Image 1 (cartoon, helix red, strand yellow):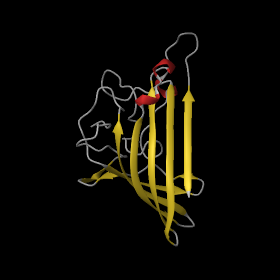
Image 2 (cartoon, helix red, strand yellow):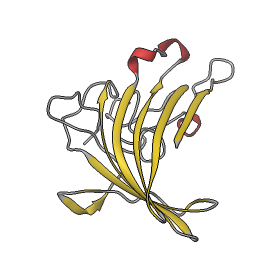
Image 3 (cartoon, one colour):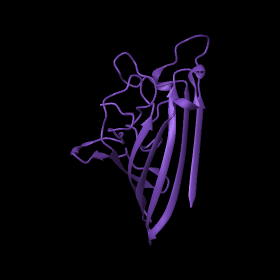
Length: 175
């Protein structure tokens, strides 16, 4: 089975005012572009933290296959980014993530485990390269239960959402 999602959002301030940070779009992580740290796409502030933006585009495509009874597998490709202002929007500036995952569908909850990496332009300026990341998300039938819990294989006590692949692909993750 194929599953698709597309999210486009635009917001603007009234009368030339600055848009509050809490009203800006943020993306990246287990619920948007799975190969990027949580809320780590798009423009940065002067400290290097995500600044959010007025425009968001996120595209997701999954191929889902049953494996055994209530166990399933997925292969996914996600693309997206955050843009400071509408005039900054370009399709050529999207970050693309690819990966695979397992789904454990119980009567109580859906447990997702994904492994993915990304390439493309995501951060300005680029951050140092990182390894691929995993994410584990517990979701009940009506919504998410708490925050996504993810970990790096080499640092199991430190919980984070997805990161990016280093090596020859462009980096798209913040330290």
